Length: 143
Image 1 (cartoon, rainbow, N blue to C red):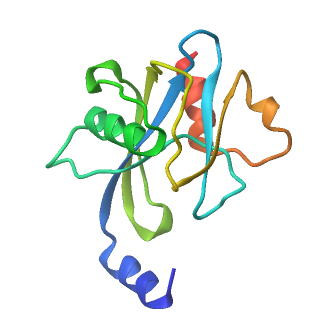
Image 2: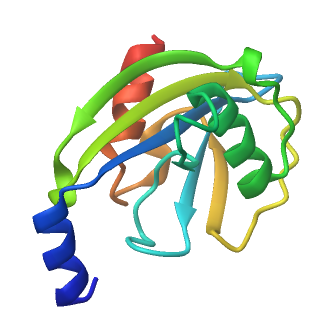
């Protein structure tokens, strides 16, 4: 992020909204983890992205993001909310909704936003790679 953009964020302190989705495998006890192709490309996390509450609900945003990033079609009504948190990371106020849904298939079509996706049973399968705190929180909430 450029110094000018950082300054703008610090002064303006915008409010943003995002979603993350914990997807369960359709036929097993596995869940999906992804590595994005931007920012921290070594960290495993959950698919998701930003949205505008005036235009869509968190469930609609999760369905859209999953379709865009993974090529999966999941109805907004099939997403359940695990948690909603407000953070002040990166000099902004961010409301993040973490949702869960069952994937209709294990077959994925990754967008360029994603470097990799894996179905795993445990984060232990990822070795010593860093893992998003949102992924860990979602797994804890989903138990």
